[in-house]
Length: 197
Image 1: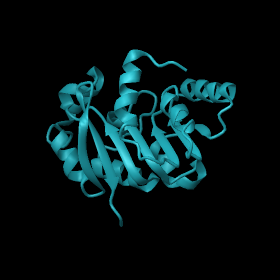
Image 2: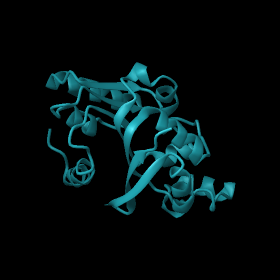
Image 3: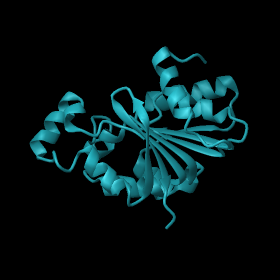
């Protein structure tokens, strides 16, 4: 498997944040499964799970995993609600959770999954249920960075103060210790350590 240059750059930035020994991994919104398959190939990783709400992504990821003979990877047609309700059914809770570029769909919903949370607290509480240790996060956290239709929806909802980097970070610190780790493109890359309850 050879990533595109853009994916390779993302992979380098993200994998630099992994713990030395990673035993379990979850990618929320795994797309075609590259990060999951890469994690599954690590020596100590007993389970690498990817979830997505787009069936073709899950199907292709499972086919590639079988073709490569990777036994520690799993892909499910599921959303955050499903996994947070029963993390054990998906191999969790997970030492490392990856949430890259899909947070705004959890918040606002999408054509593929209209379920919208409209709450940083609700989303982060669900993520903390599936995350045993580390969340690696990057997202469009400002309304002017959202894709067109979501930007219009957010502007119409009048949530410019609620959907912002500052608001997200304030809420995130209820669940995680947050450290800035650079950028993925124009969006902040955050290393978030789950707080003990």
